[in-house]
Image (cartoon, rainbow, N blue to C red; front, side, top):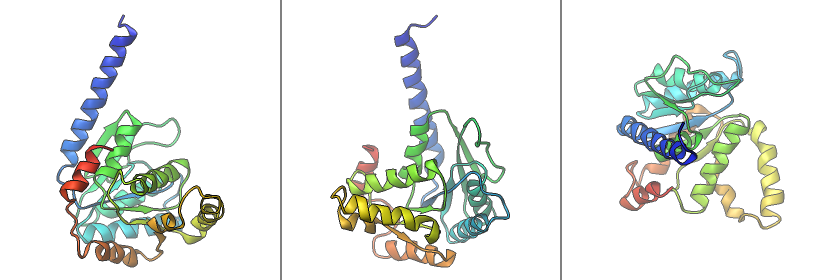
Length: 226
């Protein structure tokens, strides 16, 4: 039997290997957009149809599109990108109830460790597009907001889709987080709601018009220290 220390050492090596494999396989996908949303949405739902449309437009515009690789809005994202010009990327992880890799991945990577997978969403993204979802979606949104707010990651467009879904959360943030001094009022400007798929693509291009998609040396250094 391995000692506890031996087990921990092997786990660390496994984590390192996961980072190395994922980084190598994703090296050529920039510019990319990470998209998030519920695993529980069916293919006939308006959210699914919109997610697929957004991903298709992004793919045809030259963006690789990254999703969590599972069903629901992740499947819609990969389906849309897979039908377009640029790669559909799925970062897959096994979950007890929801996760199963969808069949629309040009690049599929399997993860055992949640935090290694989460880093890849941020590290390779030129923008976040966040559709309605549950705890996992909110986790990804707040993590990206935190990294940008604290200067641990470069500033990127963070776009929310589904104003009716998100307006209660944003109102709570304005009332409680800003109102009680937990964040600055300007921190809410790190994200914006955009509904139309064409407008989302345009907003991302507008953001990078004067700066280019390639991260600067300082931004690359930030990403190495996430």
